[in-house]
Length: 151
View 1: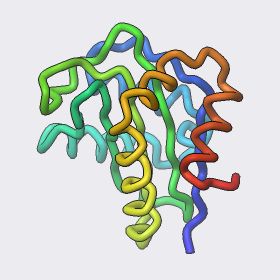
View 2 (view 1 turned 30 degrees about the horizontal axis):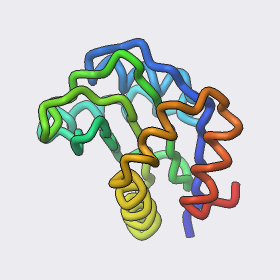
View 3 (view 1 turned 60 degrees about the vertical axis):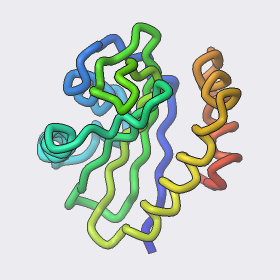
View 4 (view 1 turned 180 degrees about the vertical axis):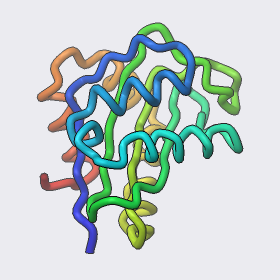
């Protein structure tokens, strides 16, 4: 069993390039920044993005990569008011960026989270509520509730 850490502190992203946005979100997120293999994780995510964009369209991307260290699936969320060029399916900028660090042997937890978040992000009102929330506590609570995360 893998623990899930949801680290949402209303990370406002300044970067407009997807690789810089990934780096920025990792250093602004406590649980990711504390990884001893942070640079390796960043490179894993960037390498994956170079192979195939995780820009899903409708202003959303879910970047992810393996993190060989630890036993926790770490989920971070960044919001970009400017928009990030992400080579998305619909060619539109990304404003909601999820970043997931998944350790080996966490496929069940990872796919479960991915399924939940993709389902939620299909709703325009849900995406809009994420973008319009100015309070980190409210955003964190709302996402935990909808994703059924206890920590």
